Length: 56
Image 1 (cartoon, rainbow, N blue to C red):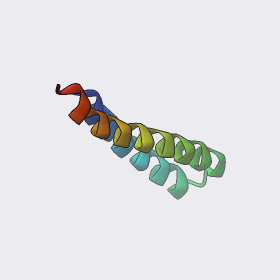
Image 2 (image 1 turned 45 degrees about the horizontal axis):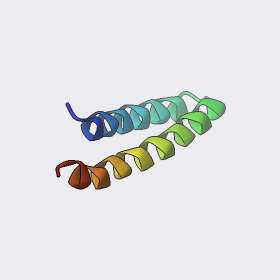
Image 3 (image 1 turned 90 degrees about the horizontal axis):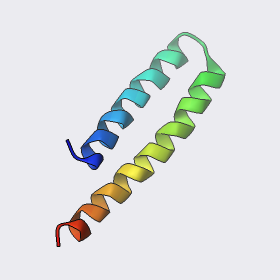
């Protein structure tokens, strides 16, 4: 599994965890997971952009 694929999987897991935390009323946890989600999404996008360059 490539780094980009692993990051996309992590995005999915973080999203599910944030939604679960929201449902059970853990606002600080939702905030922290949301910040992590933003960071991982950016890393996933960068990994996708970098895949073209690393193929050479």
